[in-house]
Image (cartoon, rainbow, N blue to C red; front, side):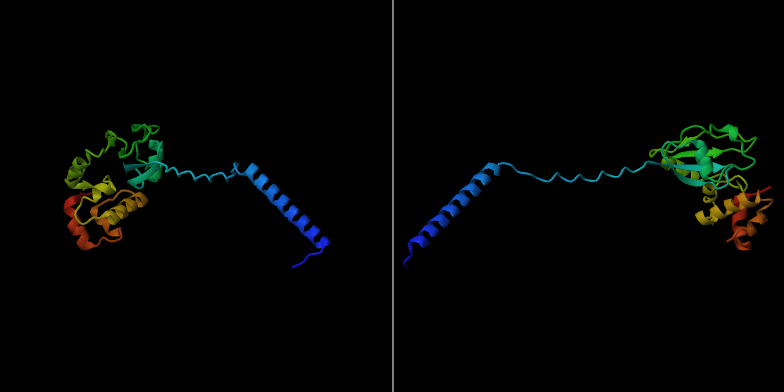
Length: 202
């Protein structure tokens, strides 16, 4: 192929420009090749901090005795409030309502004239002993003082029925006689007959 002088000159200029451009590109690449820019690592979300809870047993002269979960750092008066508050006959001065709660503690609010029981902390090593003692309550139980947990020890009374008995007592006052149990949902004549040996009421 034969090129004219003008075409040959244009081709040489084009090749020179290509060479210069390639050289500039290579130079700029060598200058920037050692610098690496990376995106900042995304921070992992902070692990959620679980709030520690206390599990306490509130019983005695409160409206709704039972097991309650309260935040760590709670005090005795908050446990009483969680159980519906104190009954009119409760002796609130018998307990230190400002004391801090401990996990596994039993808070028993006594009635006026009743000797308060010491606060009980149930540790893992003592749970079996507590369970054994609870399995052999002293019968007959006082229907107007027994907690839901104590009522559950009576043959034929489960958690739901014990809760209904305590709830009825809180709403209507003390049982005048065992026959008042017939007003509690789930208790009929046959059930009452089975419960009589284990309960008493004035």
